[in-house]
Image (cartoon, helix red, strand yellow):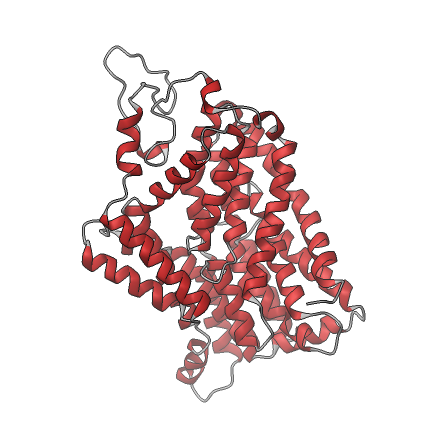
Length: 460
């Protein structure tokens, strides 16, 4: 068996192990890179081989991942995220039918400015499910709107998914279009969210207003953050309902006063996020370096509000992505990437090969980490894209990115599992089954749809 085949089998085994066992895929990838590299790389001694392995470590991507999640942790700590949510809710003017769309847009904004997709879903899903319970919105509808919103913003130039994809494309010397990638992902998720909205009761919500719900705000209703972080003890004699969260009625002002106030730290954080956006979009500044700069300035100005933020950096995600990229770089060094591209080219039908790549991305990502899939599949498709075929690189990469991300609605993904966990207990099984049906329908629909729109016409 050739070393190229062995390296691919090792990669597949890593995804399988990380799916069934609680071990970080990035840690597995680093171990695999070490063992395989020591075994097959050219070099006079172990030191030279180790240096070759470290040469594939993506230092620039490490800075991006750490920087944006550091800044987002500060924004979450000082209440900027809560303020953005409440500002968006006030903007709908009590229209119940718009509340799911607010959740979609808020989650999209969070991931677009650098929040890790599961982190943004973890923050917004308890709030969204609180609204769903209060205003009798289908929790499956609310959950899918939140997940789709996270995917919609996930490929902005400042986001984690966007940073990974654009970085791999740039490193491979392929033509890229970060703006098109972001817009295509946003519009695709917007389109499937329209289907979700009308499929699960959105039409019935359009004529309703918040005043029609006939319920008083309760402790479990949306306020300054997720219900799990706001639980209060029942007032003496009030009688708890016996559920996970008490339902003691409290004054709306006591819930919203701190969350809706725009204080100095929140204003400075919003300015910092705007600087990050402008610098990345219009001046081509490195997202990670700008994010860390803004985060450090905010920490110096207000150490109390930034306390603990450094510990909230998405270190598991950083390890996962950097580990996968390191292993894929090793595969490139030993010739696996070039060999695989040649094998794909032998299919003889470039469009069919492109469709197969998209299906692989969607199917594997429904069970494994999307960040890991993006870090692995795009480099594996590089030789195919640089060969003499009729498939456009921008179109295929965009199709692959969308196909690999919209399946996060599967209950086996982190985002889907978070929605199930935050669903009302009596509806949890229904939400689980609904996410399973929808998620696996996306494994079939998304690759085919994006292939037909972005790849087949040959305009990208």
